[in-house]
Image (tube, rainbow, N blue to C red):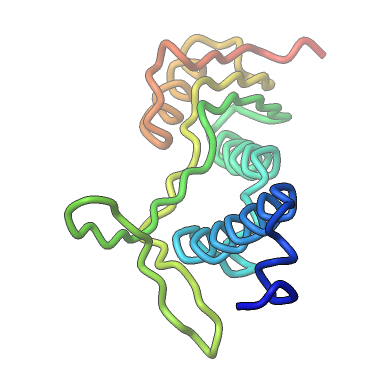
Length: 161
Protein backbone atom coordinates (compact mmCIF):
# COMPACT_ATOMS: atom_id res chain seq x y z
CA UNK A 1 0.00 0.00 0.00
CA UNK A 2 1.10 3.56 -0.49
CA UNK A 3 2.04 6.14 2.12
CA UNK A 4 -1.42 7.70 2.05
CA UNK A 5 -3.20 4.39 2.77
CA UNK A 6 -5.33 3.44 5.74
CA UNK A 7 -2.52 1.89 7.82
CA UNK A 8 -0.17 4.81 7.33
CA UNK A 9 -2.59 6.91 9.40
CA UNK A 10 -1.94 4.62 12.38
CA UNK A 11 1.76 3.91 11.67
CA UNK A 12 3.26 6.33 14.17
CA UNK A 13 0.35 6.50 16.63
CA UNK A 14 0.18 3.68 19.21
CA UNK A 15 -2.58 5.55 21.09
CA UNK A 16 -4.90 5.23 18.10
CA UNK A 17 -4.25 1.45 17.94
CA UNK A 18 -4.95 1.20 21.65
CA UNK A 19 -8.26 3.02 21.23
CA UNK A 20 -9.29 0.72 18.38
CA UNK A 21 -8.30 -2.35 20.40
CA UNK A 22 -10.30 -1.21 23.42
CA UNK A 23 -13.29 -0.49 21.19
CA UNK A 24 -13.16 -4.01 19.71
CA UNK A 25 -12.85 -5.57 23.19
CA UNK A 26 -15.81 -3.50 24.41
CA UNK A 27 -18.01 -4.62 21.52
CA UNK A 28 -17.02 -8.26 22.12
CA UNK A 29 -17.90 -7.98 25.80
CA UNK A 30 -21.31 -6.52 24.95
CA UNK A 31 -22.06 -9.25 22.42
CA UNK A 32 -20.83 -12.16 24.56
CA UNK A 33 -22.34 -10.75 27.76
CA UNK A 34 -25.80 -10.54 26.21
CA UNK A 35 -25.64 -14.22 25.19
CA UNK A 36 -24.78 -15.63 28.61
CA UNK A 37 -26.66 -13.32 30.98
CA UNK A 38 -30.19 -14.44 31.79
CA UNK A 39 -32.88 -12.26 30.30
CA UNK A 40 -35.94 -11.95 32.46
CA UNK A 41 -39.38 -10.78 31.63
CA UNK A 42 -40.91 -7.80 33.37
CA UNK A 43 -42.90 -10.01 35.74
CA UNK A 44 -39.83 -12.04 36.71
CA UNK A 45 -37.62 -9.01 37.21
CA UNK A 46 -39.87 -7.63 39.95
CA UNK A 47 -38.53 -9.13 43.17
CA UNK A 48 -40.95 -10.21 45.82
CA UNK A 49 -40.85 -7.42 48.36
CA UNK A 50 -39.84 -9.15 51.58
CA UNK A 51 -41.78 -6.66 53.71
CA UNK A 52 -44.93 -7.36 51.71
CA UNK A 53 -44.31 -11.10 51.97
CA UNK A 54 -43.88 -10.82 55.76
CA UNK A 55 -47.05 -8.72 56.09
CA UNK A 56 -49.00 -11.26 54.07
CA UNK A 57 -47.82 -14.09 56.32
CA UNK A 58 -48.54 -12.03 59.44
CA UNK A 59 -52.11 -11.32 58.33
CA UNK A 60 -52.68 -15.01 57.63
CA UNK A 61 -51.33 -15.87 61.08
CA UNK A 62 -53.66 -13.29 62.65
CA UNK A 63 -56.65 -14.81 60.84
CA UNK A 64 -55.64 -18.31 61.94
CA UNK A 65 -55.08 -17.35 65.58
CA UNK A 66 -58.36 -15.45 65.85
CA UNK A 67 -60.23 -18.64 64.97
CA UNK A 68 -58.99 -20.29 68.17
CA UNK A 69 -61.51 -20.21 71.02
CA UNK A 70 -60.71 -17.52 73.61
CA UNK A 71 -58.29 -15.60 71.37
CA UNK A 72 -58.91 -12.04 70.11
CA UNK A 73 -57.06 -8.79 69.33
CA UNK A 74 -54.09 -10.62 67.81
CA UNK A 75 -50.85 -8.86 66.88
CA UNK A 76 -48.08 -10.78 65.11
CA UNK A 77 -44.44 -10.10 64.37
CA UNK A 78 -42.37 -12.55 62.41
CA UNK A 79 -38.81 -12.61 61.19
CA UNK A 80 -37.68 -14.12 57.92
CA UNK A 81 -34.46 -15.92 57.16
CA UNK A 82 -32.89 -15.26 53.78
CA UNK A 83 -34.55 -13.88 50.68
CA UNK A 84 -36.24 -15.03 47.50
CA UNK A 85 -34.10 -17.30 45.35
CA UNK A 86 -34.83 -18.08 41.70
CA UNK A 87 -33.52 -21.20 40.02
CA UNK A 88 -33.28 -21.12 36.22
CA UNK A 89 -32.93 -24.05 33.82
CA UNK A 90 -29.36 -24.52 32.65
CA UNK A 91 -27.94 -26.28 29.65
CA UNK A 92 -24.96 -28.07 31.19
CA UNK A 93 -22.94 -29.47 28.30
CA UNK A 94 -19.67 -30.26 30.00
CA UNK A 95 -17.51 -27.18 30.57
CA UNK A 96 -19.63 -24.19 31.39
CA UNK A 97 -23.34 -24.09 31.72
CA UNK A 98 -25.63 -21.55 30.10
CA UNK A 99 -29.18 -20.57 30.89
CA UNK A 100 -31.91 -22.08 28.74
CA UNK A 101 -33.54 -19.28 26.76
CA UNK A 102 -36.84 -19.65 24.92
CA UNK A 103 -38.57 -17.27 22.58
CA UNK A 104 -42.11 -16.31 23.62
CA UNK A 105 -43.95 -13.91 21.35
CA UNK A 106 -40.71 -12.66 19.84
CA UNK A 107 -39.20 -11.97 23.29
CA UNK A 108 -36.39 -14.08 24.73
CA UNK A 109 -36.88 -15.34 28.28
CA UNK A 110 -35.05 -17.64 30.63
CA UNK A 111 -36.84 -20.73 31.89
CA UNK A 112 -37.68 -20.36 35.58
CA UNK A 113 -37.59 -23.79 37.25
CA UNK A 114 -38.61 -22.79 40.76
CA UNK A 115 -38.80 -19.90 43.17
CA UNK A 116 -37.80 -20.42 46.80
CA UNK A 117 -39.19 -17.94 49.31
CA UNK A 118 -37.60 -16.91 52.59
CA UNK A 119 -38.25 -19.21 55.53
CA UNK A 120 -39.78 -18.09 58.80
CA UNK A 121 -37.16 -17.71 61.53
CA UNK A 122 -39.40 -16.79 64.45
CA UNK A 123 -42.93 -15.74 65.41
CA UNK A 124 -44.13 -13.50 68.24
CA UNK A 125 -47.86 -13.37 69.03
CA UNK A 126 -49.55 -11.01 71.48
CA UNK A 127 -53.28 -11.52 71.99
CA UNK A 128 -56.12 -11.50 74.49
CA UNK A 129 -56.25 -14.98 75.95
CA UNK A 130 -52.56 -15.58 75.22
CA UNK A 131 -51.72 -15.54 78.93
CA UNK A 132 -53.65 -18.77 79.48
CA UNK A 133 -51.30 -21.79 79.44
CA UNK A 134 -53.67 -24.00 77.40
CA UNK A 135 -54.27 -21.27 74.81
CA UNK A 136 -50.54 -20.55 74.61
CA UNK A 137 -49.81 -24.25 74.00
CA UNK A 138 -52.59 -24.49 71.39
CA UNK A 139 -51.35 -21.45 69.47
CA UNK A 140 -47.72 -22.58 69.63
CA UNK A 141 -48.54 -26.05 68.28
CA UNK A 142 -50.88 -24.62 65.65
CA UNK A 143 -48.27 -22.22 64.29
CA UNK A 144 -45.52 -24.83 64.47
CA UNK A 145 -47.55 -27.25 62.37
CA UNK A 146 -48.86 -24.64 59.93
CA UNK A 147 -45.51 -22.97 59.20
CA UNK A 148 -42.96 -25.68 60.01
CA UNK A 149 -41.31 -23.54 62.68
CA UNK A 150 -39.94 -25.24 65.82
CA UNK A 151 -41.94 -24.47 68.99
CA UNK A 152 -38.77 -22.97 70.48
CA UNK A 153 -38.99 -20.19 67.86
CA UNK A 154 -42.59 -19.25 68.69
CA UNK A 155 -43.56 -16.95 71.55
CA UNK A 156 -47.14 -16.26 72.67
CA UNK A 157 -48.01 -13.62 75.25
CA UNK A 158 -51.22 -12.20 76.64
CA UNK A 159 -52.27 -8.67 75.78
CA UNK A 160 -51.85 -6.21 78.62
CA UNK A 161 -54.76 -3.88 77.80
